[in-house]
Amino acid sequence: IPWRQGIPRRRGTVETRAARRAMSGARDGGNMMPFGPGGPEEEGGLAPPQMIPLKPKSSLGVALRTTIEEDFQSFDWIQDEQIKWLSSEREGIRGLKTRRPASSASTKLMSKKQMQEQQKTKLVELHKMVVDLMYNMILYRFKALGIEPVRAGELDGPFADLGPIDLRQLTEGIHTQEALELVRSHLISVLGPMLPKSNQGFFTSAAKMPKLQLSQVYMTSVMFGYFLRRVDRRFQIAKKLDMLEIEFRSQEQSQCSYEYVTDDDYTWTYEDVTGEDPFSTTMEEEDEEVSVVDEEKGEGKPKVSLKEYIERFDAKTLMQCASLMSQEAAVLLQEYQYALFGNIRELQKQMAMAIGPVEQGGSPSPEQVMQRISQAVSQGNVETLVVTFADQRRLVLEAVALGGFLRDSEDYIKKRATSQILTPLPPLPMDDSQIRGMLNAGTE
Image (cartoon, rainbow, N blue to C red; front, side, top):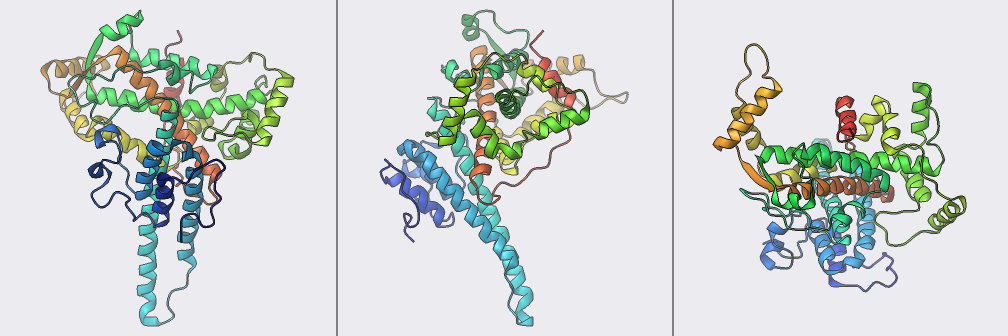
C-alpha cells in the first residue's frame, strides 16, 4: 500500500523524500532499511556514528533521524502518524492472542506455539521502534533549541573538551521560572564546594574525577530533570486552578488534592490548562480560549514556591513522581549512559577494587571511601576524566533537559496513542529522604 494512502496530508507540507522514507519504513514492519544492509553510517546519508550517542535499532529510527536532518518542519506531523501506526500494530499483536489455532489436533499445539513466538517477536520489534521514536523526539527538541547534545566519544578521555553552548537556551528555553530555581540548587549541589566564584573560573578551573562518578552525576541529573518536569507540571496546573493556597491538614486531604491532577489525566489538564503542547507547532482552539481567560484573570506571583509545593507531597506521591513511567524510558537511559561513558559495569568493578573489600567490622566510613577513591585516582587505578567546571555545568544542565524531554515524550505518546504502546514500569523502591535532601541541597 502506498504510504500516502489513507493518511491526511498536512497543510503546507511538501511530500519530501525524508517524509516518504519515514512513513514507508514503518509500514514495512521495521524491516526496510532505507540505507541498505550496511547501515546509515556506510552511506554517508546521516551523521557519522560518533555524532549521536545512540544508533537506531529499527528502520523507523533511521527514517526519523533522516527527517530531523532533511525535513525538520515535518517531524511533528510524521511522529503523530507513527504513533497512530504503532498503536494499530499493538492492536494487531493483541489480536494474535484471541486468534483461534488450527482445529486439527495434530497441529493445534504447534499452531499455538507459533503464534506465541510470532507475538513475542513482534513485541520486541515494537519495543525497539518505540525506543527509537522517543529518542528522536528528544533529539528534535534539542535541535529546535539549536543545541547539539554531547556526542558519543567526547567523554572517552583523558581530557573532556565539549566546547561552548547557549546556556540561556539550555535553561530558560526549557524550564519555567519556578523550576529554574530548583535547577540552580541542583547545579550547586552536584558541582560541590569547589564551584568557581566567577564565570572565567568555570573555563580555567578543572577537576580530575573518576569516570564512574561523572556518569553517576549525569544520570542523577537526568532523573532530577524527569522528576522536576512531572512536579512542575502539577504545580503549573495547581497555579492555574488557584489550588496553591489549599491547606493540606490531613493525609487524606492531601491525597485527594493530588489525585485531582494525576499524570493519567494529562490529556485534558496539561494542554487545556497551560495552553502549551511541547511537540506541536500549532495551538488548538481550546488552548487559545484558556489563554484568553488567563489574560482576563491576570497572573500574580504565586505565594507558594515550587519547592514548598513539593515539600507538601507525602512519601507515596513523591516516589510516584520520581519513578520512570515506562520500560522504554528505562532502556533508553541505560543505553544512553553506556553510549556516553562506556561499560558501566567495568567502571563499577574498577571502583569496587579501589575501595577494597568490606572489613569484618562493617563497611568503611565515608571519609575512608573518599580517601581510597582519591588514592585510586592519583595512582591511575580507575578511569578518570579531566573536566573543566564549564563542561561539568553543561553536562548537568543538558542531563536535566534530557530528563525533562524524556518525560515530555512519554506524555505525548500516551496522549496520542489509541492503544497502549508504552510498557508500564512499576515504581522502584526508593527512600524519599534522598529526594527531599536533593531539593534542600544548595539552598542554604
